Length: 112
Length: 113
Image 1 (cartoon, one colour):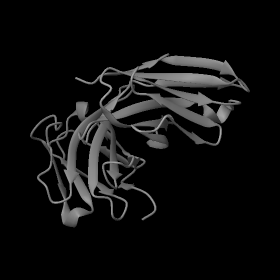
Image 2 (tube, rainbow over the protein chains, first blue to last red; image 1 turned 30 degrees about the vertical axis):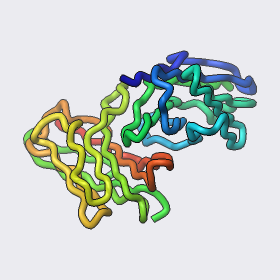
Image 3 (spheres, rainbow over the protein chains, first blue to last red; image 1 turned 180 degrees about the vertical axis):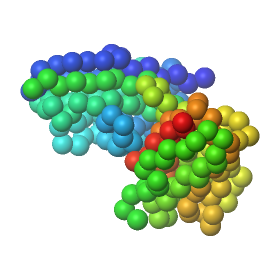
C-alpha cells in the first residue's frame, strides 16, 4: 500500500532564504508525482507535475526533483518571499491507478 | 472554461436539510473527482468519474451522499439530511488524461448549523 510522507510538517524561515521541502513514498511504482500549494481556506493550486520518467521540473523559483528508486521528491524554493507562505502538498499516482495518494503537507511560513 | 468552477463558494445550511454542490470541469477533461477537507485535515477522496464508466463511489462516507455527472461534464454532489460532521470544504478536480495532473476548483465551504 502506497504511503506518502512529508517532512517537515511545518517550517518557518526568513524571507530570502532558499529552502527544500521533502516528500517520500513507499512504493516506487508511480506514474507521476504532483506538488500543490494550498492557501488558508482556499483550494489547491498545482505547482509542478513530474512524470515517472522525468528527474525534475522547474517553474520560476520552484524546482521539483524525483528519485523513484529511493522513493523521494524534493521541492526547492529559491529566494523565498512572504507570498510563498502556504501549505505544500505532494501527491503520487501509482501505476495505472487513477487515485492520488496524498502527503499530509508542509506548512511553510516565510517571515518578512 | 479556463479552470474548474465550483458553486456555491460558500453554503450555510441547517442540520437535516439537503444540499447540492456543483462542479463544472475543464472542457475536454475526461475524469472528475470529488474530495472533501475538514478543518485542519488532509484530503478525503469521495468519488471518481471517468468517461462513461461506472463511477468509483468507494469514498462516499454514507448513503446520504450521492453524485452524478451529466453528459460527461458537470457534476453534482448531493448530501441529504446534512449533519454537522458534514461541514467541510468540498473540492472538485478534473484531469485530462492519466498522464496529466489534477486541476482543482476553489471548493465549496459547507457549514451545517
